[in-house]
Length: 321
Ligand SMILES: NC(=O)c1ccc[n+]([C@@H]2O[C@H](COP(=O)([O-])OP(=O)(O)OC[C@H]3O[C@@H](n4cnc5c(N)ncnc54)[C@H](OP(=O)(O)O)[C@@H]3O)[C@@H](O)[C@H]2O)c1
Image (cartoon, rainbow, N blue to C red):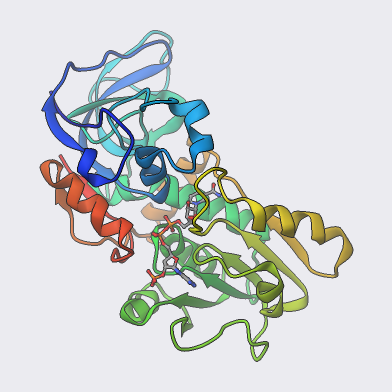
């Protein structure tokens, strides 16, 4: 089969399109014919091997799995022993082990049935970013009528977080750069703040919930955008930490929380089909859609990676196979 392969950690230049052996499904796993894959910031971290601490789990000197990519949508072509939820021919989406390829392996507990009403590209965009956004909104216990600020609204996680907050009846403000403000309005946000012109932490506006997904705004400043009893959820942000995963802000928020009137916390994504089933139901009901940049064919995966790494992507970057 054709696959994107990396023999060492590095930037997009280490990715090569090659012929490799098709994988086989083990216990509790399925073999998928991949129709679409998607990129996420996590995929870039696994590709570069930075922060270095990641290498303890994913390969010290080079990636244990040479085929990058996690998000996937495709058709089941074989099932391994003890698979109970899927059969050959099922159309699925979820998280795989090496999705930048014509075929890939996924654990059945990380897959859900693809809603018939959405395309493979739309489904592939959703798993990691959608699951993370869902965790953030659940952790914040967002309710109708609350004001919610989504920092990083134009990115992978943010495009789903805005829509999920709108679907819960919240009054949503998204933060993004100038070129992507229209996208955030299209997601259904009530207002948009352009972080390149306006300081959303100047204290002139406060919100019941702040979901911090993009940028590395310090906790002290994020708290200025919160009401006195508001909730801060830190999802991530790209720092220049090369050794550890840059969890300093999250740790700071969690340790400070018991001593202040606001609730300050962090979330970690949970890769499980229960969340994927909820995303599928929301997509079927028309409450959640994937907002995607232009798709890239498999052979152009390195360009797709460069596009995301440069911060140029609006919404999700998808690879068609
Ligand atoms: N906790 C978890 O389990 C988990 C799961 C998934 C992802 N993450 C992390 O969450 C972060 C976001 O992931 P993603 O996939 O959404 O990334 P992404 O697609 O690259 O989006 C990044 C977002 O951050 C915005 N942004 C960049 N610089 C900013 C600044 N200085 N101030 C305010 N906003 C800024 C971008 O806006 P513009 O593009 O408009 O500039 C964009 O909306 C990453 O650090 C990722 O590693 C964590």
